[in-house]
Amino acid sequence: MHANSVTSLAVALIRDGRVAYLNAFGSRNVAEKLPLTPDTVMYGASLTKATFAYFVMQLVDEKKIDLDRSIAEYLPKPLPEYPKYADLANDNRWRKLTFRILLDHTPGFANLAFLEPDGKLKFHRDPGIRFDYSGEGLTLAQFVLETGLGLDVGQEMQKRVFDPFGMSRTSMVWRSDLLADDASVYLMNGDAQPHRRRSKVGAAGSMDTTPRDWSRFLAGVVSGDGLSATAKAEMIRRQISIDSVTQFPTLSDTTTKEYKPIQLGYGLGWGVFETPFGHAFFKEGHDDGTGNYALCVQPRRACILLMSNSDRAEGIYKALVGELMGDVKLPWRWENYVPWDQPK
Image 1 (cartoon, rainbow, N blue to C red):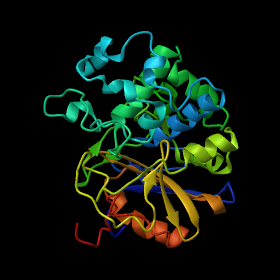
Image 2 (cartoon, rainbow, N blue to C red):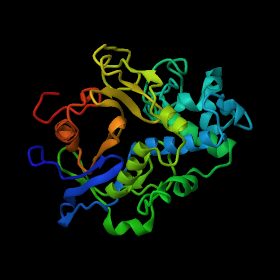
Image 3 (cartoon, one colour):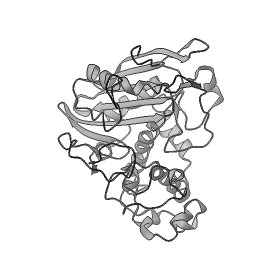
Image 4 (tube, rainbow, N blue to C red):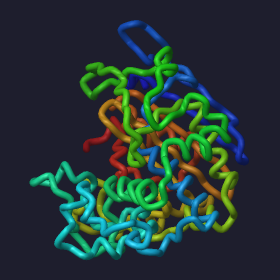
């Protein structure tokens, strides 16, 4: 942390399905000299996607949804007739979309529609053929659950995930009771920004959580709690292989065979690869001033969770994972976890 000027870091280690170590270092607010603790509220960023996928697999277990049914079968009217998805009016490929395709990041969308030159959602590929990380896919999955099944995703995740795992300081929207101990975020140049308080549920990334809370969830996932063995296996099974050079920018056509030996791919809401110790699943959570990383080696039921409010933290993650989990053959360059002491 000192070598790369990392503001704060929380570390959790899970061994044999239990949280065996949990600690926090550095500051949640440098100016006020407030320490980061395991109970500090931090932005989960895209850890939200993995948490949402776990909830969706519960619905699969209950046969409320089928991973391979077209989303058209759940909606009262065609998707483009909803204003939010009117951009797809002249492209019938939306009917090929399924929950599997939305969760394994193969819908053919950009990561976020507002990043498109014209700001409009569109298909860049046929659905289901290639991994292109897409928050829009998770957002659409949420829309189908809410519009087609009448579910309140925020309330359902509270009831099905946060409450059962004792995640009392985790929420899909900001709560006033979290204010007493939340973390500011720090950009690469050290500038501080306040914790953003999100008022709208977003499956792609609205969750606030704490290191203690999400380590409990991660221990539950690796132990198979709350899901059938079939649903758990399907969630972390390789659904699509990945041959992109890096995870971002999304939609790049440049390919590589570099990650073939570790069988890098994506499951449902989680990335996957093979380590010398067996099958692994992982998820990053990145935003300005947020760097989160979770990795589990399933046969050992061993995981690491790293959470930071500093843009500089990801530069030490390769070293930390290697030290604390062993040489798992981490696809660090694909994840843009370039060590602080190496050229980009």
